[in-house]
Image (cartoon, rainbow, N blue to C red; front, side, top):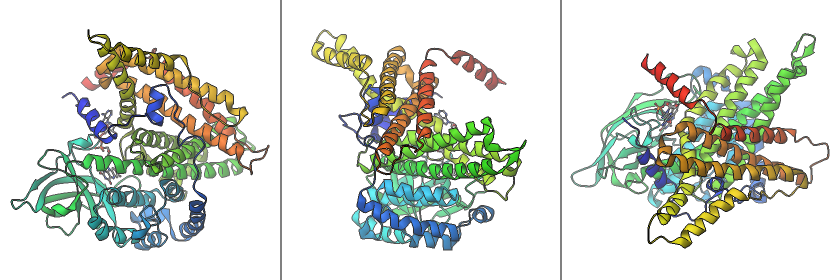
Length: 578
Ligand SMILES: Cc1cc2nc3c(=O)[nH]c(=O)nc-3n(C[C@H](O)[C@H](O)[C@H](O)COP(=O)(O)OP(=O)(O)OC[C@H]3O[C@@H](n4cnc5c(N)ncnc54)[C@H](O)[C@@H]3O)c2cc1C
């Protein structure tokens, strides 16, 4: 069966807030614009929040150093209750929840800095917190009624209750809209009766409140607040045995004729996908922070080892092929942190229009971390293979990031198609206006001039340091070239682009590269201006990232014209027939 791309785009449109007039950061790139809000100047915390964060971080580090044993968590496949209680005492289970419910009321930017610390030590623990907080509790904060919040939020913040988020099912993985769990209305209309199965649900075996997605009689997906004591709630496999993040309790569960009061509908009936995709923005931003933390840990391990391990009479760090890995790791880590910061600030701005950016962050940081862990592993050689070092665990743990909260292939398609929509609509409007006798020539002229303008003028990328002007101009030129290629792709393929994943991947790859480069340039610009910045301070990681990123963007765009797509298809089809 042909995939329902039109349906997927419709779903995405429902989730990308309707009626947005001014394209934001990512969407602007597709139109050849650069919208500097939230990127430039580089975002930072308010002095007040920075002060509060400065008191939380040392306490957290002390706790993690003394009470968290990631190797033991991995071995036992469990996070001890004392660790969960300790995290709750430090406020980590309700960091971003409002203060009236006992939370710290932290911004996403501050929360990400906290989660970077946890992600740098133990992926099981960071994913446990992410499932509880960023997608579990957050759904309640954003969509709960006052009564639901009064009932659930405070115990969740205190860690007396834990949360989970249950969307995935046997037939609804990447195709999240294909939820089969049914919610039919009871005869007296007081409650829904849920039937279905969920799988791969983080925290389900330890959760006291689960946000469960089910299809209501309107054939749309609705979010329900479910507790495990409801009759018909069955954990069919409480802790699935797995490769990595083994400390998390990942479950399979079923709901069988389970009555759920109507008051437990979370958000509007039929708007469950909106709930799911909104909280996933927070989840993906937190993924970015956790991947950044893990990348920093790898870099430190790799540097220590490269400075101490000697072979052929030299330290490993003296060999060019090791330098090359370390340099790439440092450059990618710098970019991961910059992109997490900008994306978190974008979320804090209150815009609902940040799904493309959070998807870009998730793809970029999860792919970069996988390379970084792999490079660190290689630098350690045989020593990495043994369980007395953290690297084999980190390798196993890192693999989930490219799959969880949206497989990267699916997100790449989304990044491309959601971005292409704006210029696509403009071109369609122009096309229709030109082909009708009552055509509005003014409109044709206006859109035409806008498109020509984007093709001719590179947008300004306003850096404050003159030494960065040439990079900023280069980046502006790449944005212009990107938008020209976007128009070309749309004119060439029209609706067929929905099925052209090779092209989508190139468009998404270039867009992610541009977004990452803007974040890096902005961070670099801000760092030069810091009073503490000295002439000898080394920012070569930023420079290296930009050079490599510009080259990658050019390559993605060139491959739109010169590629092996036909041969790739033929080879894959031959393999699929065997
Ligand atoms: C450890 C773990 C924890 C999880 N925690 C949760 C949780 O708390 N709550 C929850 O609801 N879910 C959770 N998930 C589910 C997770 O979100 C899904 O695994 C993920 O969305 C992918 O779905 P799938 O596994 O069914 O893969 P599938 O949908 O079967 O996809 C398999 C692969 O096919 C490819 N693919 C799929 N569709 C396309 C496409 N359109 N184009 C190109 N390639 C495609 C991708 O490479 C993908 O990796 C968890 C999963 C794991 C492994």
